[in-house]
Length: 217
Image 1 (cartoon, rainbow, N blue to C red):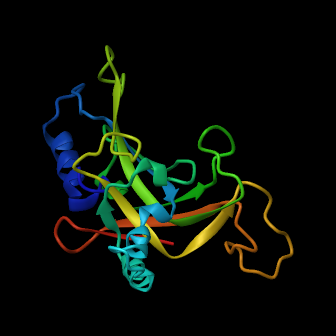
Image 2 (cartoon, rainbow, N blue to C red):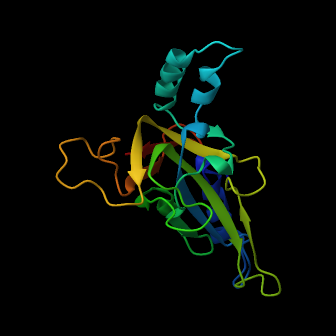
């Protein structure tokens, strides 16, 4: 499994081996995989660093760097304290039955601020991008005695796979209150914060060996 589960397209080799060499009734471990996502705040970008570089305010450079980061996904470890929305499932794979063609998909997720509990955030919150990760399941289908999930999420111990970070060109204001109806301001601005963020993500195997093309909108 590669970054964001599918990078390096190693899963196709596993599917081929399963189809050609696994005995009937044999096990594949893990047998499920799920790609999940959440929105992150300013702390998940490099902006705080550029605001105070050895006593110098270099925020103007930070905006340029963030703009560059918005062009390509970044593989890095995100601190869980920088997550500002609830978690949402992007896509689920049954590794015991899926076909290789199912690695290419388009799916959507909707992100909202937590409504209650310690993670609830009052007022307007700025979301600077979306972070993706994957969980793998050793389910009771094959692990009846002790099923377990292994996660690469920001809320778990950091792993080799890190997380995959998509930075917005401009941050989006969101609120867990009511959006301003009839406002002339753009939705997602401070004057008219959004109630949720809807994102569509497409992933397809690229012509370059073991690469994937991924697009977020």
